[in-house]
Length: 113
Length: 114
Image (cartoon, chains in turn cyan, red):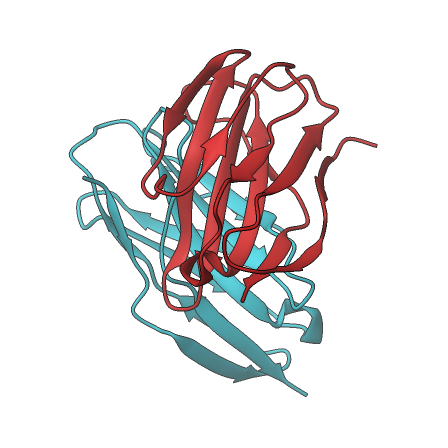
C-alpha cells in the first residue's frame, strides 16, 4: 500500500522569507507522480506543482520548487519570497498510475505579516 | 470555463434521510472521483470511475453509492446518512493518463449529518 507522510502539522514564517514543507512517501512502484496541492481558506484544492518520478530534475513553478530525493522517498516543497496569499493548508499527494491520489495529512502554513 | 461543479455546497440533514451530491465536469474527462476530507486525515478516496458505466471502490466506500451514466456527471449518493459521514466532500476529474494527468477539483460540499 502507498502511504504519504507529512510530519509538520503546522508551520509559520515571516512574509518574504523562505519556507520548506516536508513530505515522505512509501511505494513499491518504480514509476509514479508526486503533487503538492494548496488549500486556502476557501477550501478549493489548487495544484501547486507536480513531479514525475522518472525525471531527475526538480520541478519549479515561479516561487515554488521541490527537492525530490527518489532514493530517500522524499518530496519537499520550497516556497521562496513567501506572500500572505500563501497562507493555506498544503497537501502532498502520490499517484502511481491508476489516477488515484493518495494524500498526506497536510501542513497548515501561516505567513506572518 | 473549464470547471468541476458540485451541488449543493452546504447541506445539513438528519440521520437516515437519503441525499445526493451532484458533480459535473465540462472538460470531457474520462476519470472522475470522490474524496472526503476529515481533520487530521487528509483526503481519502471514496469511489472512482474510469468512464461511463465503469466505477470502483476507493479506500472508504462504506455507506456510499455512485453511478456514471453520462461522461460529465458522477453523483454521490448517501442512502442512509449517519453522523460519521459528516465531512467535506470533493469531486475531481482528469483525463485518463497513467497517473500523470492533473486532477481538477470541485469547490467542495460541506455535509453535516445530525
